[in-house]
Amino acid sequence: MNEKVLKVLNNNADYYPTNLEKKFPHILEKIIIMWDSSEFDTCLNKFMLDTRDHARQGFPPEIATEILRLSMLHSKQFGTKTSNSWIDSSDIRVE
Image 1 (cartoon, rainbow, N blue to C red):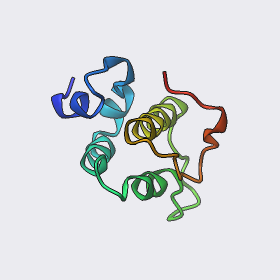
Image 2 (cartoon, helix red, strand yellow):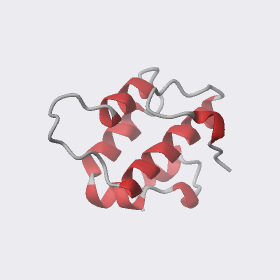
Image 3 (spheres, rainbow, N blue to C red):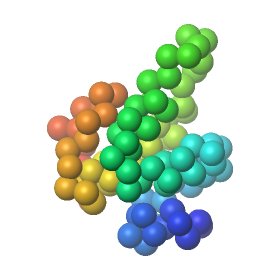
Image 4 (cartoon, rainbow, N blue to C red):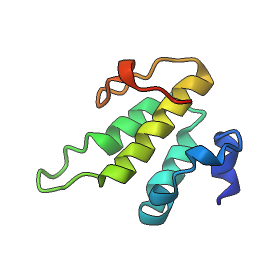
């Protein structure tokens, strides 16, 4: 496990995005870089709402789930409500 990733997760391995790290390490790296930034939600929106090519398939469900969990954990850590338009956070809990 990557120490930088664990650090932003407050050393909670339960939230570790193993699939994202294996299949899309460049995206995980960008998420970790942006973690403390006010642009975090904008960064995630760009990943999840790609408008570049209509032929794109999007992320596999397990990757999208890990990104969603990271978004929710980020909101919980920083005491903010997520502003990502690609989710409805009213019925999602991060425990």
